[in-house]
Image 1 (cartoon, rainbow, N blue to C red):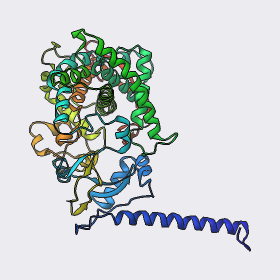
Image 2 (image 1 turned 120 degrees about the horizontal axis):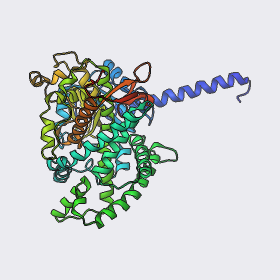
Image 3 (image 1 turned 90 degrees about the vertical axis):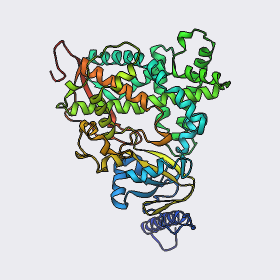
Image 4 (image 1 turned 30 degrees about the vertical axis):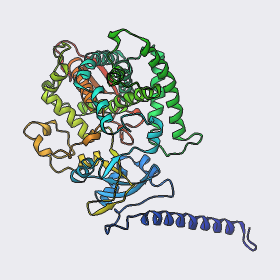
Amino acid sequence: MPVGLSWPEAAALALLALALVVILGRYLWALRWSLSRDRGSALPLPRGSMGWPFFGETLHWLLQGSHFHSSRREKYGNVFKTHLLGRPVVRVTGAENIRKILLGEHTLVSTQWPQSTQIILGSHTLLGSTGDLHRQRRKVIFSRAALECYLPRIQKVVSWELRGWCMEPRSIAVYSSAKTLTFRIAALILLGLRLEEKQFKDLAKTFEQLVENLFSLPLNIPFSGLRKGIKARNMLHEFMEKAIQEKLQRNNPEDHSDALDFIINSAKEHDKEFTIQELKESAIELIFAAFFTTASASTSLILLLLKHPSLPCGALPGHPNHPEQGQQEKLSRLRYLDCVIKEVLRVLPPVSGGYRTALQTFELDGYQIPKGWSVMYSIRDTHETAAVYQSPPGGFDPDRFSATQTEAVGRFNYIPFGGGVRSCIGKELAQAILKLLAIELVSTARWELATPSYPAMQTVPIVHPVDDGLQLYFHLLQPGQGREG
């Protein structure tokens, strides 16, 4: 303690010194990024804040959810800078800005996921592949022939799960139940896993631990999100290796009808053999493509149908005839159902945006985007602010996607699955699952809120009810009974 100072005075002096260090640190942090601008461009950096040293604005982003982006968009405009998950980021809203990014793949930008996501998922996935390899694998896994193979079995799983919800006398936590549904689809149908119910639940819990830590600070230290994600990945890889070895040893052609089989057989046709590591990472990615985001969208579908009972659900189909041939084509012909699904995904897109990295410095909305910076285009903000819809963007109106209004929407005002060559790998599968779920819901069940009010929705990193708060009662429809009966 300095001579002549009392303890309170010394404490106040220490706090003042600490405050000065924090202020100086934040100033130097902001200066560091201001000096990183490309001096070869006369354009300024976008407005915005880089937050605190190293952490940036990551904690604000995780805690504030969609308010983080909307508040900064209102303050700084459709293009603003921030610092998230250890990297400088330019957040972008608006169809024209997003058009430039998505059509600039491989020239202006390249796909870039947060470092934590790349570490956890691995280097042999579609997320990280490019060029011919990316196109070939994507085409094989989610081709029309593959979807036709999956759909009849998906419908059986959806019907079985929904009837289980209706038989439950207590309320159903919809998001948790939707995750169980989509994980069962991924495990049984995409991977062809043969699981006891306990194995299934343990595997689902481990995978949930992996996904919850995909977007974390790149700190591989004890108790960090990245360390938890790596631990979950290693446990999943251990299980998948055994399952893949068993699959490779089976010679029954009837077993060769899941997505992993399509990958293996396609590789053989092109005189290529995948390593076990490549197959393990592909298996995890297949679950990722069908699990959390589809569970989010399924929850949103159930919520929005409940919130809008005046929706003409009579226009939605009941059970169609179910011959297995051409089921994907039949789903695509259900026009009003298609409008409902599109509107659900417009109002509550499962993910808020997509990541790219700048390959060169380029201009966007009067600002420079420096080479090497991350670019995060906003799906939700673009949907909410698009002025092209004939009805207010804030409402729920499936008719905005009717044949007479679709042309006005434009290609980049509606991007729930991203766009360009890197659009969501599982979008056709997700849309098919949502349509089958909608058909089962309106033809076999009615549902009601089990709580006094609707829950708040969390939007980062995936849209879902806060604290799994969407609690509903499901009931089987009696003959002649409507959804509101």
